[in-house]
Length: 134
Image (cartoon, rainbow, N blue to C red; front, side, top):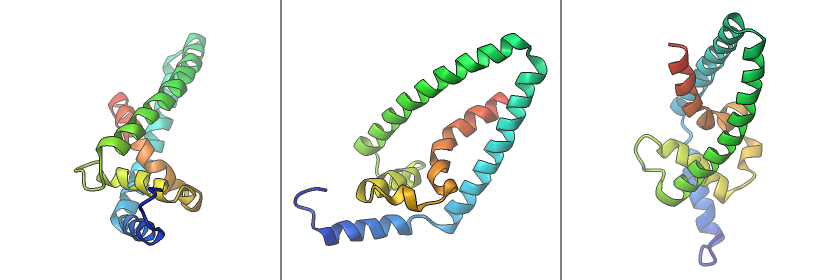
């Protein structure tokens, strides 16, 4: 918290950020997570249908590399949103809202459900899986 920032200001900012989570955003999140899950299952099915044992080993290696890269890229995205973006930024403003809420109230993630916590992170993966299944 900024030393000059009063607790009242912090609560007002938090209230504004919470109001940014609209029913339309919620419906969008449910839809994208559903589609992402279906495409991921289809992707896994295709990998094992058309690949042999070598495919399984290669996929395990790729999973490890993917976890490391996801951790790194999430840090870069988090830094970018904290440094350059705002809740008013076109297209990504709703994602930035989640970051700002977390900074004002770190335990906010513990109070949200699975969909609200994970959707913003899965939007980029959703695009990759969608392209892969076309």
